[in-house]
Amino acid sequence: MAPARTREELRSRHLHFDCPSGIAGDMALGALLDLGVPEAVVRAALARLPVGGYTLEVRPCLRKGLAGTDVKVRVGGGAGEGEGEGRGGDEHGDEGEHGGEHGHGHGHEGEHGHGHEGGHGHGHEGEHGHGHEGEHGHRHGHRRYAEIVELLGVLDVETRDVALRIFARIAEAESQRHAVPIADVSFHEVGAIDSIVDVVGTAAAVAWLAPSSVSATAVALGHGSVWTAHGRLPVPAPATLEILRAAGAPVVDGGVARELTTPTGAAILAALVGEWGELPAGVPVAIGYGAGDAELADRPNLVRAVVVERAAETAGSGAFELVEANVDDMSPELCEHAAERLFAAGAVDVWWTPATMKKGRPAFVLGVLCPATALDAVCAVALSETTTIGVRHAAVGRRVLDRRVETVTTAYGPVEVKLAMRAGAVVNVAPEYESCRKVARATGVPLKEIYAAAIVASRRDRG
Image (cartoon, rainbow, N blue to C red):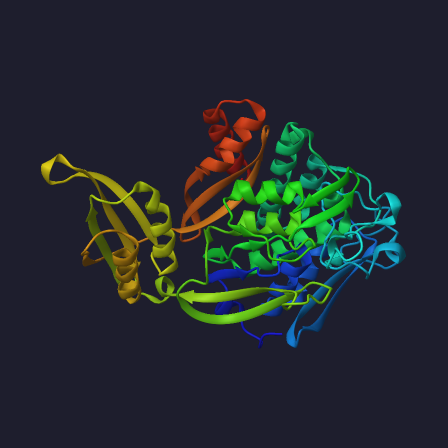
């Protein structure tokens, strides 16, 4: 467990996830608690949900000698945080059959029925399944997406928005895989209380941290196969792969014959991460480790969360540099990789502008905005990752509005919108293009109508 830190020390910083052993919902929640998010924050959010029949266990653990936090959602038989007055839990009840034996082959929410044929639950056959019990097999009925959206309505706005973004990623993947409109998506495992607890708990922790930005490494997936309600399916699960594909996430096999990343874990990353790559430049403020249940042969079964004070966050409002370079002999295919490296070096914005150089030659002008403290690192990347032989830079001033992303519910489905604020007042609302496009494709409604509906929904939610 990380040393106790105040919210002021942790919030509004950069949040980074390392995923060499994959990620599941309970691992993400464990890492954030281990990082320093108060357990009371998570339990308070869960207490607002009108569901019960579970117990949330949070305890320290060791994985190959590395300390972390292990989170388990015990379903059936115990009073649950968030049980609500007079409201019993769902029909979960198979803990004796499924609980405690899973290795982080986290059963697949949204596709692997809780309580599968042949008694497999969610674990992989034999050696497979290396365990996130919070996403495993307790027999549950289906929950429609609309039910989950309604269920989350009791949460505070910040926690609800994060949770809706996570569930929206899963709904979009299910819609794509099963060729049904998002409104008609019916969840299997992901509607179960253990998965809802993981998502809402993680959302509450993220809302408390209020990160300025989020990044993650390539995501280890594992390989092999798993028994599901649909028969034997390959690992990674179809929903997991679709969620990460839609998010543009880099993935690796991970070299383990078991499931390393679940749909819930993938959806948490997809909903939060804006940058994919290694830990960005900055000062580590706090570190947390969230545990899977089983011991892996070659590595600790942990996901790591790091709060980083990036160079951009330590710089004053005017302590920025504009870096530019004219490039006329570089393949456009190299631009994306160069931009990723520049962001990792500390850039806050990167762009390419078409230009015409001598002899009428088409060219690009590379533009980079970075804090002054990251100038040397940014220039080094520009000189190594592009074909330019020189860069120019100048000090510039910068003023920005506070920003956050929230998910609004429209008649066509959930849509992410970005809010820009000054002194706490919203001064601009901008629907996120990719989110609107997914809904437009799924429903056949013109994109401009999705945009308009998202703006109206955002204003409605803010009263």
